[in-house]
Image 1 (cartoon, helix red, strand yellow):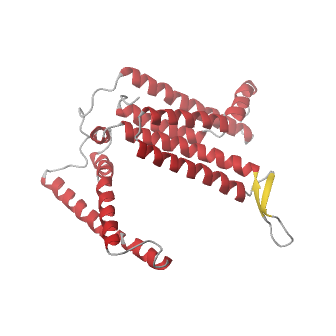
Image 2 (image 1 turned 180 degrees about the vertical axis):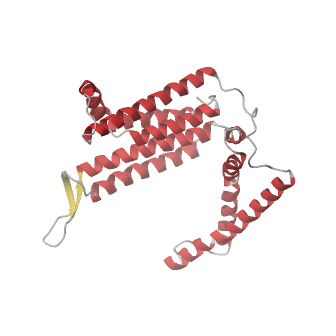
Image 3 (image 1 turned 60 degrees about the vertical axis):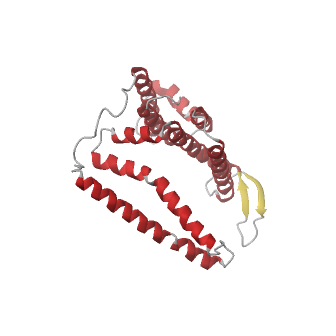
Length: 276
């Protein structure tokens, strides 16, 4: 999976994100999340990235399920236990089963999108990713902004590291001098970062102006190897599957709103209700 064409990886990321929005059932979202997880693991991420991914995953899943379980307001409500029992003047704070399941569904959506995005970034070399963005059939101005934003992220991260290192050398320790001073200091970190970003953007714009860059000219082609036919067919099949899911959801929504009902589609309605 690491050797797929960058366009195939872009398409997979887009289609998984679209399906994570269209699907509503826990089973289908679980299958999608495991598929995305398999893509991410096929990129053979390093241990630091894997630890970061697990931390983001656990905090996202746990936070959504617990918060929705405690603060779910819709009906029906099946109370599992109460941290604060309801009283005469208090509604109480209870853990609701339906909120927990709703938080699980939302976390599966985020897991699928996060895993696919990390697969795209980790399995594609930086230069190949830049070339793929630059070769997209879009105006060069848009592709340049996307490439520049991705290209300068490591520079911004390094600038942030240097600023925080300077603060530590001056004796700054978060929360040791009070919450308000910590907030002021953290907000003050943004000023040198913004100054550096403005300087980089001016240097880049001057370089583009000297070289006669035209933002309205078509994107440069030939920067990437040709897109294999079998991968095009795979993307076309997945795109067709996504469109089929979208059409089925629209038909089911029209049925629920009593706008359109076709008796011959009863099997489709049942399938969408149970699995999509």
